Amino acid sequence: MNVNLGYNKGCNAVCVFHDSEATALLAAKELLEIGHEHFAYAGWFENTYWNRLRREGFCRALAINGRQ
Image: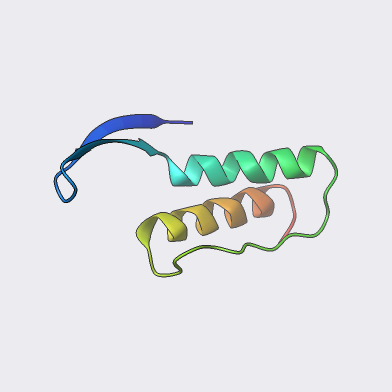
């Protein structure tokens, strides 16, 4: 998983950013490995870029492993 340090001009602060897609891929992989068979994605702030990346990453990981 990628973690980046950046500066947010909007709030005048140093921030830590993570890779949303990699986070979702890892979460799906872990759930599959421990035997879960039914999945749902409940995102937060539906129209945000990072939420879309998480949802797509999660769904892609499931599809790669023959799940929907």
